[in-house]
Length: 178
Image (cartoon, rainbow, N blue to C red; front, side):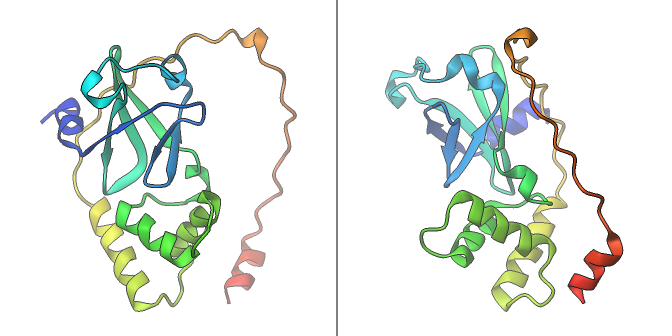
């Protein structure tokens, strides 16, 4: 089975592409390649102009959007906050742990804690974490190359201030864990 066949078999959601990107399951996905399709009609009248978005329920860190020019892969906007891939059921569990009214950022923090720093998780969290790791072990074919993003004139972008990160001290971090 090819990567494109794999994408075709994934579950589908029909979503609009807005300025923020694509919303699925209280997660926001975005990439620069979605630019030409924002606020555009997909051409599928039966779905009220929404776009066909495929996602892997065992790795919801990215989604795949079918466009007339090919597939576009959009990453979850809070992915840098989470240190490991996660499944949809892991996300739902983290939302329950974060509580009512939690923002997407709050849930991302809880999710990262659940996946990386759970020293003595409760029974439900331990089960969810084990299921997530088992789902990651499955073999997935190589996905097709994403469609090229439209050319951006670099001279139009303002220079950003670069803020250096501090040095990571392993000893200090280990002391926090003990």
